Length: 238
Image (tube, rainbow, N blue to C red; front, side, top):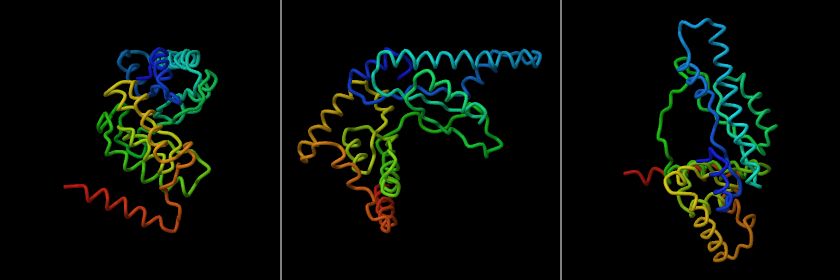
């Protein structure tokens, strides 16, 4: 979706406020090294191959950052998904040097499961609109408890109404992925148009006017908020 400067330029021209680049997966690097490797290879040769593949993939990613920054004058966010803690800092430093405005850190698996193998993935590929409930619940709570941070709603934005709900809950931004995969970047214009019409209808001149309007303003009532969300979720189940 965002694996080339050309694609990213289309999203910028469509009106997005920032771009999260495709993730760089350490598992993917390790799997490719294993595939190319020979079990009969000397340990030194195997180590060299792994390092070569790692550097090659990282170099490709750094070029993606640089090329995207040339055509997109908006924040470009790099995304890393590491399995071993030794690689996090080094990856992040090089991405920052390449021009990334921010870095998204993904945790695929906490290493508490001794049976976990890198590359194993479970769950649905795409999100659905129902997934937004969890983001709304916790942004509504967290944005009231710690209001000096910016929160981005991720997962479940499949309609422009979802964007409005996320902002009302306290989100400063929304991340959209599955909806673009299933449709196209042209959704950006439709979503922005809906948001502008909604704001005009409600008499809102800017987003800060209604951001967090429906979050947990009274932290002492957080249990009531959570209970309401709980009842709403399970009452919809048949």
